[in-house]
Image (cartoon, rainbow, N blue to C red):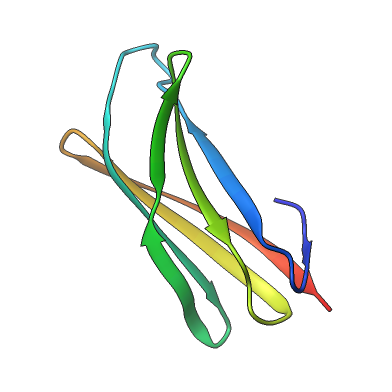
Length: 91
């Protein structure tokens, strides 16, 4: 993910797909946005299905400059998956 400028409000949208081509359904998805001070925001992702693809999306607004970690947790069937990305916010 590209770095952001402090004050930006932006949509993050992740594509979830099967590497084997099997059909699936995301049961739940949540996110946690944190920096060196701890968790700054958390909530549920919006789950959408478009053209046989599944997307997890959330709107973020980092409050300070520095390095951030965004962790997304989602459940498919009995399995839980996690994806983490890092990005910077500059003044």
